[in-house]
Length: 148
Ligand code: NI
Image (cartoon, rainbow, N blue to C red):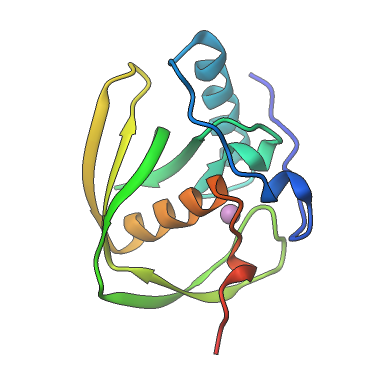
């Protein structure tokens, strides 16, 4: 399982491209996810999105409830109005730490590795990580949030 190079920089066009949903959980998709997990572990991250390894699939991984969870074609279908502010970093933006507002609770739908549709309600840290990763899939980075 190769560790992949992580794409760096707020102005890198690779990180700004919107990703495309994958039609099926193929061998290639599974291999990509395996490689992303290895890459994230090596970098001591809590989440990683496909554009960060120069891929265009709508796929990310996130630590949810302490467990590395692959999210295939994730969509945030519900967000609480209540938000909180906390510091975030990003493996693609070394040494950048910003206070980012995020919904405290979200509902996310996605496909798991077996291609089965999942819907989960997440709170607090788990919700924050998934919002950060889904932002990546839309080409959005933490530097895009106006901080005051
Ligand atoms: Ni990030």
